[in-house]
Length: 81
Image 1 (cartoon, rainbow, N blue to C red):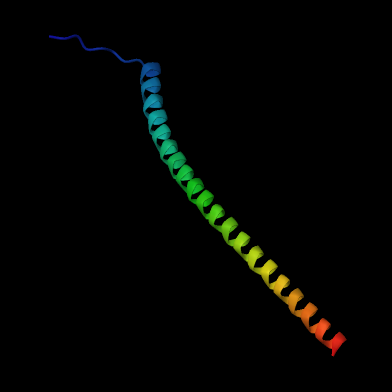
Image 2 (image 1 turned 90 degrees about the vertical axis):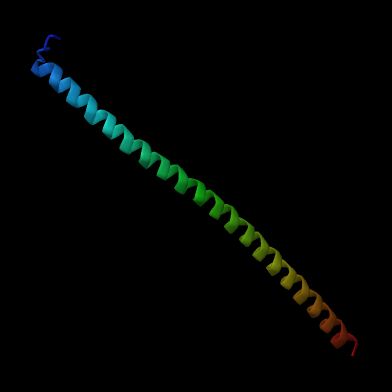
């Protein structure tokens, strides 16, 4: 028959602390995984926003160029007309 081990209060406290720490580490690992996923999604969204802003800047520059050309043509026609 195996001997029963007498567990001291200190050993019991250390075992329960170890269990609580491992549970806490699991919870923290899950939180970190969620945070990394959210950060990756935000990076993708930022890239999309940057491309949209670049397209908008290009469209505005094109409109300014066309307006300038129209102004030059109208000014030339009024000057010579």
